[in-house]
Length: 374
Image (cartoon, rainbow, N blue to C red; front, side, top):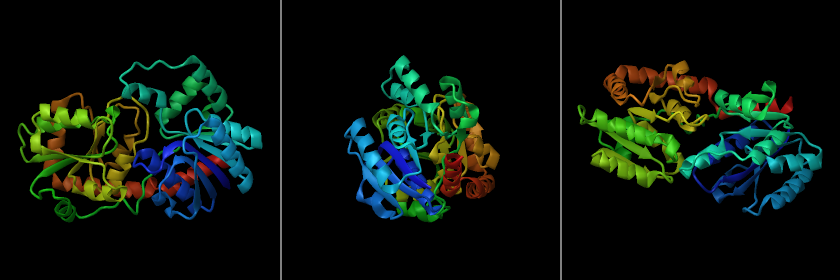
């Protein structure tokens, strides 16, 4: 199958979850012998390493320009399907209609709500935007949702047929994210060998719940002074989180590493004793980090009763799902896990096994291709 893959709001020169998802899916579709032409906002020379995927950039020239560029590529490669990664895929449907091709849509989250959270404004959906989205999405051959909760929202809010929406979660690069020696990675990255380390990796936005991890660390350190924390990543919430850590008196017990090369992320995860994802119950999604933690063989503590697909942690018996609102109970459960080295190793082994069996990007790409060919 020949894919025209539109990811028009993705800048491949930046380190972010949407960059990882887009490149991994495109590359693994190519591994399955599909031809992929990927159109993004921008890219760096690093993104060109894969010779199996042709990458094009719109450089932010607007909708009309993107449609013209997409039509040109579409005709050049004799595309079989237009695949757009966006909640309102207006470029994709325009190209598909003008080329008499089917189109599919991939939806990773409710972007309007994310923007409202970033700006600290109440979420007020536009009536026209909702109408336009409904008209576009109902015409898609397939809609890919990354979690069951996101499928439910799409079916209920946009009147989609349940059979039209396919739940296909994110994957993980199993060659890059693999168990590494904690002793060696701590030595290489300058972490003491005689501490217990809670860790987080991700883009620092308000919905990541890093403030919950900081509160947890402060509570734990009331009785266990050898427990420290590390936050790996950057983003708009970093300055606020650093000030919050100071207000909690965490001092040198928490390290903010900032952005690190994507290839180095597994080394940081391998320094953790427990990997954290205490997201508040705000938005639906399929976080990459939990699969990356599991693939690295680290036990996971994540939030229960959210719209995220954290159920894989329980399915794999690779960690704990807890209610972070009850900070004392969360601290008690975390300390018990920190103190039980045997259990942590068993959880790590089970997590890696589950990731190998269910979470590869190749499996994700296979499911996407099957949904698009129906």
